[in-house]
Length: 420
Image (cartoon, rainbow, N blue to C red; front, side):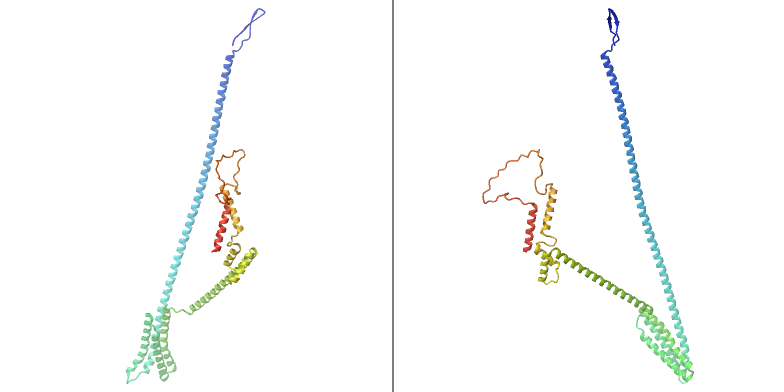
């Protein structure tokens, strides 16, 4: 800054100090630089703050994502654990049910075996008692019947005749034992039993005759009955053994078997009736379906149906079978069922559209559009000599479309099949 002196009316007067432009400019530049640095520092601080905020936000988002991922993993883990626990619980329940069923089956089997053993023991004990009672009864009857028989054969001059009653009663007992041995060995025992009954009736006749002549009727009838009752009761015992050995059924078992057979017969008859009803229903449904098919064919393909009826009559068939319909379809329309000229054309058009879509070209076969501002591509000149008259050259006829070539191929194939 400088101070200037001016002269006014011959007198020197000091004027106001003036600023140095250079220094002012330098000061302004310093101030601007300081302001710029301060702005830069502020901008850097703002940028650092924004970066810190952004990083904090990203960190928060990452933490939230990680938290959500952890929650999803925890939920998935819980779900998988719940599924596994459910499977384990189901397996445990099935195992417990299996073990319970096994225990129940084993307990039932043990109870059944125990019941069967008890029943077998009871049966064996009953058999033993029955045999013991039959033997004891046979002995009592022999003791009752022998005195009258011995008295009948008593002769002071032929004492040995008194052994005859012992021979009769003992012979019957021996023969019964032979029958028991035959039953045990699985051999026929009827002839043993017949001889035992014969000896018993002889002894009974002796007791009855001698008792009526020498004693009273009660003695005669009682001793005769004793001669028959003893062998008869034992024979009943042997008869039961024979039926058990042969597996003969009791009356109750026979009735149950007859009842089961009748029930099975009724079930078979009901099953046969059900099958007949199902067969009739199937036949009726088949007839209705055949009638509907014939009506549909007659309505939708009148010419083919008329020819098929004629062809069936010509071949001696009473109805239009599938083979006759196929032949009629070939004769009238030149194609098998499901095919026709319209269907083939429609299929060829659809195939042409699909091929055009795959090749990204128009369906009508025209070239792709070219922008008007694009210059046409330069083509090299190709020399095409003039064709001679009457001589065909490659490319002189228009090229057929793929659909036309396919249609011509199908028509030629059908013609060859028809000729064959």
